[in-house]
Length: 27
View (cartoon, one colour):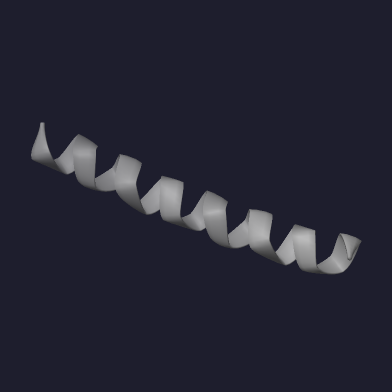
């Protein structure tokens, strides 16, 4: 269960980083 939670956290962080990059490009 911890492994799944860890994967989810990493995926969320990666998603946020990508969203920030896209936001920077849009601006």
